[in-house]
Amino acid sequence: MSNDSNDNLTPPAARSGALANPLLRRLEEYTEISSEARAALAALEAKPAIRIPARRDLVKQGAAPLNVYSIREGWACRYKTLPDGRRQIVDFLIPGDLCDLNIYILSRMDHSIGAITALDVVEISREELESLVDRYPEITRALWWQELVSKSCHREWIVNVGVRSAMERLAHLLCEMFLRLESIGATSGESCDFPLTQGDLADATGMTAVHVNRTLQKLREKGLIALSDRKLTIPNMAALKVVGLFNPDYLHLERLNRHAPNRSAGG
Amino acid sequence: MSNDSNDNLTPPAARSGALANPLLRRLEEYTEISSEARAALAALEAKPAIRIPARRDLVKQGAAPLNVYSIREGWACRYKTLPDGRRQIVDFLIPGDLCDLNIYILSRMDHSIGAITALDVVEISREELESLVDRYPEITRALWWQELVSKSCHREWIVNVGVRSAMERLAHLLCEMFLRLESIGATSGESCDFPLTQGDLADATGMTAVHVNRTLQKLREKGLIALSDRKLTIPNMAALKVVGLFNPDYLHLERLNRHAPNRSAGG
DNA sequence: CGTTCAGTTGACCATGATCAAGAGTGGTGG
DNA sequence: CCACCACTCTTGATCATGGTCAACTGAACG
Image 1 (tube, protein in one colour):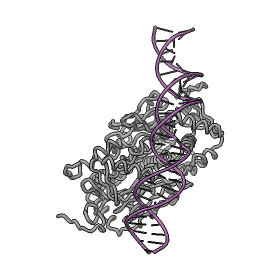
Image 2: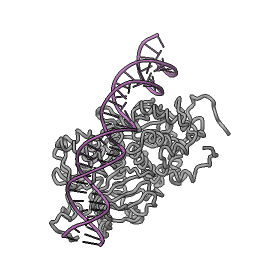
Image 3: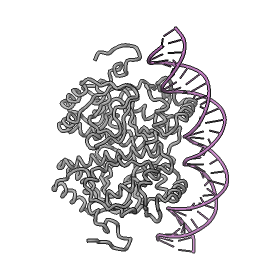
Image 4: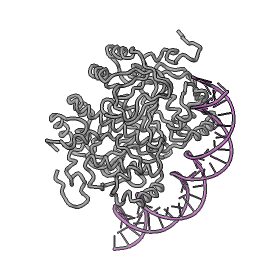
């Protein structure tokens, strides 16, 4: 049954139905989850979501982490700021991402988490998480996996800002985000919602917004992307990967590829 | 363990004795380790070390990870290379560091680990590690901690190459390495062994070796560092921190500071 | 309606890259 | 022992990538 509604005010999750429980869905990429554990996770996600307005901080650098948040809908970013105001985004968070297991060990957050769009998040207390982890070793394993994959992404970001040129950086970031969105079913064909401003892209790639603007234009001229009105289209992913020197290994989606239903060809 | 001499070829560990079991020492920064667990870890480290020549790869990108290595002596680095040969170092590894828990989850290494100096490493098989983790939850907790701290370092490196200037980058990196060395007892006063070449520093900071050379000269002129013959001295750490916009929070050494004074039995 | 924010464009400039060459050192083999 | 090589550090000259500053547009919004 196809349940498309035509208004574009409905959140993607409600439209597709694929993201009903993005955290569970994500963890299942990594390991087999028993039905008991699945029920426990479903109970968590059944809690009423908290809505965070766009551009608001969800967690502030320096604060003591109290809760873990599961992002059910919307985009967020991890970022750090220098005393003089310079800002570096170190990661983007999309539905199914968890922030922040640091709660377990760190007394203070060493970075902030900010909402890009409005967010629906589920707050998970330390106790709830501990109870889950104690009872279901497969959940522990899946959380480990997610942490290590996210660490692998951090490494690739170091490479991105460290040695790649401006065009390579942007191409690489666009490839990464598109594949990550695809893995949670948040793309349709060659397109996806893309709420990042040029300023966000600048802070994530270590460039200025002006230069992001000019570089995006070059990518457009080459026919590699279409990006406007918060909508990204990548008509030729293979070509964009070449430009961005993009190798998807670091995303460790291999399990995903095994589990995910086949997509039709095209691109 | 009977290597004793006054020549300066003898590794620091043998000279000071402080690094007899760097892995155990490191994990004890994070959590209380029971005497049984301590004995098990000591047994691991009692295994004969494997010596890796300087500038040799310990683990190669693309390979299936089979073992975890505990670095007992020497410096190594994690790095990634692009197809055209550009190289980015994403982390340095010093005694007490473990590489690589990726063994648990990742089918292929997404980066290489290379020896900077000659290394003494202890190879830990998957089975040995699993047995440790199964029997001693405090070891699991300590490994978690170490992973999350190392992830936090990755984030700071993204900031470093993303928004800091050349001088800030180098100052920051020197601060980080000095504090990490200090935390394992590998400094003496304001000085420490520092085996990185200017080329290594370039690959770690996203600069060229030429520019590293010129920037180091400026740091020397300002009296902030002395660096020659693989020996680093930081006569005024506070000033160097200011130049590098260095805030040590991300290293999460707070437990170290808390435990260090009242460390009783052992030591 | 005025304000704010995102995107765009132009002119100019600085940081750091590139290219090239030489000096000092240590290791190796004839 | 010396000749040779490889590697690291250093310096100079030149140049390009991308930053800075500034102004303008259009859309969203209270």
